[in-house]
Length: 252
Image 1 (cartoon, rainbow, N blue to C red):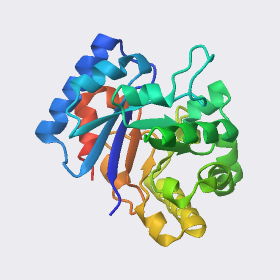
Image 2: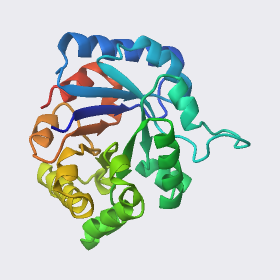
Image 3: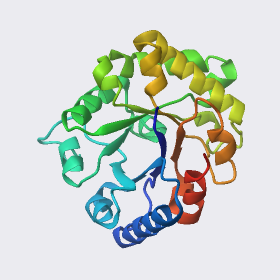
Image 4: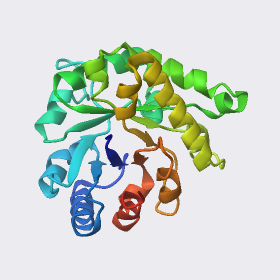
């Protein structure tokens, strides 16, 4: 039975003191009223991680980083290695987020190096994939996403692939005024699971959690999570509001 997962990506938001208070509020909400069957993860900025981990009930809420370096250590000014992430007590790392790809030029080659670092440190990657608006309008989204997978995750051994969480981001529906429907989310998630089955087999595909990374809120989480191939969400803005985040967690 694959995991139900709701992961909050705080992005470049909150100071350390505010992040600690948010972590405490999320923990309290989850412990007192969260679905115990859902794995909850919060991914604050790097500088928050140690303090946030100390503020969480790690039995109910795990911590993750939003990125990590492609190298293990060395003269890479400004980088944060997977080993450093692990040393904070975090257990997850978001890799390949659309904002990292678009604003910082992350490529499949870079992500393969980061995946290797994450696995070396025993962390769990939350690997993001998804298509921009021109690709969706051209109707070639399936090929686009499949290529992203073939250039990265599908190069892994089956053992390593089974450690991955996937997040589908409909980039074309984020901040564009266009909306991805629940049916469109299910369609892509089912396609991704089918591609995994072709590469690794049906049993492996059935065990991989695929999260929805579009504009998921407490108001639409239940509809999205009712889809058979949507196993949770990678949540942006709504994860900064404990009540809204809890509504999403309880959306199954």
